[in-house]
Image (cartoon, rainbow, N blue to C red):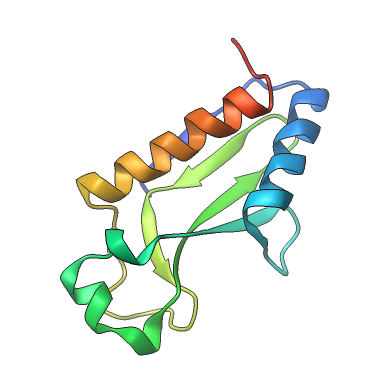
Length: 110
């Protein structure tokens, strides 16, 4: 699995990250998992055509000392479909910009 991981976080930093995710993402039914919705203007042509598979999201997992951002663009309605794929370059930029903003807002500096 392709992922972007921010690790070696302290418990207070994890709390601030979780607070930010609660405001910016949808919480999953699973503990410590969040969904970040991908904007429609960043969908690939195949994803855009698959309206019945939308919304498209990335999973964000928070553990006791790290936060993991999946680089897999998932359908929230189907587990298998050809519209589910690793992030395109534009989608990766969106994810990395979100990570940068989260770290800044949560005051994670080093």
